[in-house]
Amino acid sequence: MTKNALILASDIIEEAQHSGRRAGTSLEAIAAEQGDETMLAVMTEMDILTVAKIVREHDATIPSIATWLMDAESIKQLLNVEPSYWQNLDEDHVFCAQTEAHSLLTQIFLSSDDEEKKLEVLNAIVEDDFGLLYLSLPFVGHDFSELEEDEEQTSGSIEELLMKIKALSEEAYREVMTVSTNGTLENIENSLRQNANKQRVTAVEMDTDDMFAPL
Image (cartoon, rainbow, N blue to C red):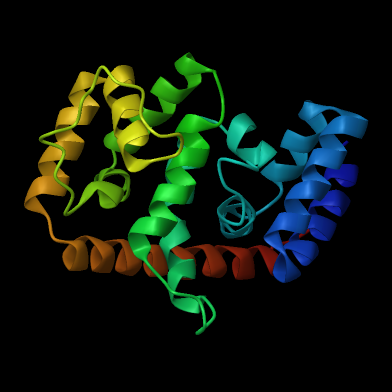
């Protein structure tokens, strides 16, 4: 199993260099043909940067299977490194950090019905300073004073995401509102970028060390 997982993970990592979406499709194929346990074993052999690249190239309309099966701690780590990809977007792409964060968070919280798992993930994110910043980013600069909470929100909207957070945890909702109200878009984005770049450097150094580890 371990050898097979290593080989499959190597193939997925190489594929992800070209397309996170195609790599995600390959993970789904592994799950379909060999089961979720095998796919999780493959993901265990993959670095978090590659997993982040796969997940971020999906969204709530076409979610990555990784999002559904990753544990809360792994998703928290994913949010810590994902902003390191922001600076590498194509120049013709109209970049907006809020849009990137919104897309990833809707995939995590609005694409499945496992409320218990989503609460576990939410708690893990909120307990981490940078996780809380990431979670709050989509809501910075928006006025929700006239939001009708009893009404059904537009599917995939920031309002639906905010109400999902509130439905899962009032405490998390209050923390998000505090950060998004008091923080500025520039400061939060810069903090997330700096932390993610540090995480990337650390991850790369660990991978390099592994290359020279005794067999």
